[in-house]
Image 1: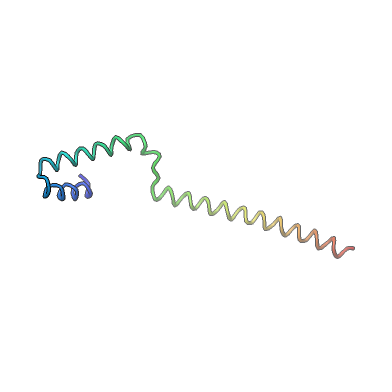
Image 2: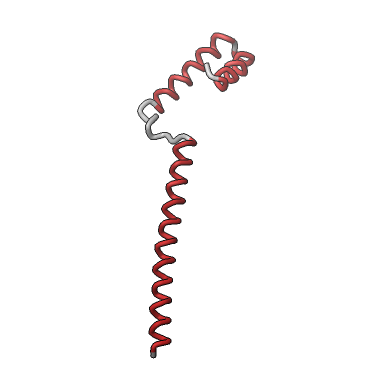
Length: 85
């Protein structure tokens, strides 16, 4: 049993008795396992999210640099046209 299951068991044991509490906790545990059985690979961990955020930040920085260089080139081209006339 995990900590949350132990806490649930202790709370229920006081209200409905030990045998009934154990049965209810086992039932809830079984339902949760069935619900998430095939979905373990879909669930993200904190490490997965941190890695994804890091990748997103680097992509944003890359595109900001590309647009900055493009804007600088356009400004230089406009300045050349303006001052050569």
